[in-house]
Length: 162
Image (cartoon, rainbow, N blue to C red; front, side, top):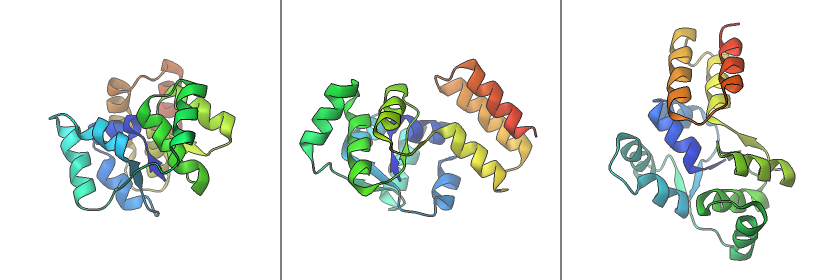
């Protein structure tokens, strides 16, 4: 799985990052560009992400194929971090964790599997890793920090309240 800044930051702000990394069941990779974006400021979420990197729960990699990176930026208007995440995931067939609308659209066009912070939360609840009341609290945090359409939050709340 390749982690983009949007999802890493949202998971950290909603206090879900540690549980997510414990449950990932696979290596979690972050492009160097995403690390710089996530950890380049002094905030709690930046420190949580940096700690996860230091503890080697997130592996930082550089994009090997610069041409693929540049093509993603040009074709989809992606930022450096989003393009790097998809460029790392594509040749390996890995899941991209992103909450960036353009990156999600690029994943759809490229037939690259993706997930979002809300999907991670819902899955954690379904697996019994967090209780309903906690999941609903975390959803409120994601709604507060993320740029989600109201319909997405409403649908997620309905899923969590089943």
